[in-house]
Image (cartoon, rainbow, N blue to C red; front, side):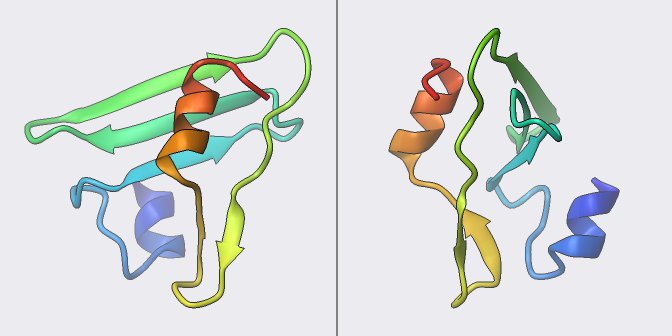
Length: 78
């Protein structure tokens, strides 16, 4: 929550946006989402391979992914 507030000043953790935090070696990801009355935290760790990092959008100043890529992450596709 603090990282979102300090690093992504234009975004709110309770906006409905999904926030991804990748581990150093990109074998794990934490996904934070507000569902209306509390936060959901998903954790996914790959046994092999690594996740592809989201692309930087210079128009928004944020890293963004499509719904399809998010679906791949949740299903362990790397």
